[in-house]
Image 1 (cartoon, rainbow, N blue to C red):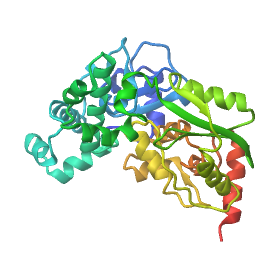
Image 2 (image 1 turned 135 degrees about the horizontal axis):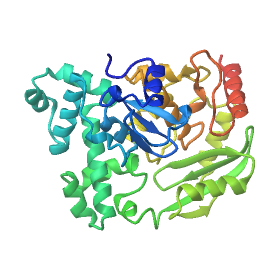
Image 3 (image 1 turned 90 degrees about the vertical axis):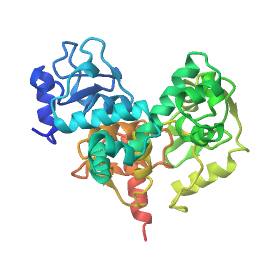
Image 4 (image 1 turned 180 degrees about the vertical axis):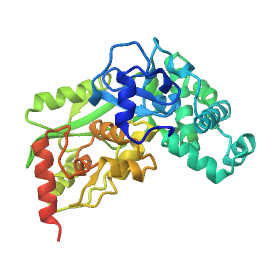
Length: 352
């Protein structure tokens, strides 16, 4: 049996049957609850479209899911040698986030290249990316518990404040001090305007764009922004965002195929990798969810890729509209399937 069956139907059948023989082999996360379980869990079964599968509890947690309190999947013994090896690697990295490949190789008796490939195969990210994600999570826990930024920084394993602040923009979406306050004191400028796809909202912090959304009514667009950043101060400011706004409108009109704008978005390590891959899809072309998953070296992560697309906060800048089903059919789009169809048609017409 494969570590994670490539046929997700097999995984889903195991969940439906509450097949205990799959415990320790696969884990499933439920997007609607944010919880992950082992297949035999007695909790209410989810809808298929809300489920994604993982080979390890650590992979599920890295994707943002928390352990089910009922079936305690993170206490389930592994039933596969490769999964056991990667779980041990995760434990070693948790003990020493600065451990390099050579040190991990010596402790597991694996070659560095094999170790790197195996870890990425099951976790979807490299050992270094996993270590960095652990530091980030530790820092967040410490500041949520009331520790000062400096104390939390060292507790999390950051050797200096400069190293922490280097990571702040990508991993927190704000400075560490602002994160400690739950985003309070953070100022976001925003503006709305007409576009070829309806009403367009663009919002930005002093670091970069944090939201580009499409809709029918300004009230709904602004409320969604407020829901996303409930502690931040939202300030209407058309003039301060004029440069970014014009670039996006020109892109929509086919005058500027390549958008290269500064971003300030919060993401897990996996989301970052998916969004980076989306930005590599050439203008006027498409890629399938499964193709993106293969490019990431995680071919069974098709649904996780779809989830990352669905949570993309910056339409157009990160072109999630260029991702389609394997057969070329359009699938759901956060801002409406017709907008997705219109975007793709326009891009294809503008390709010389």
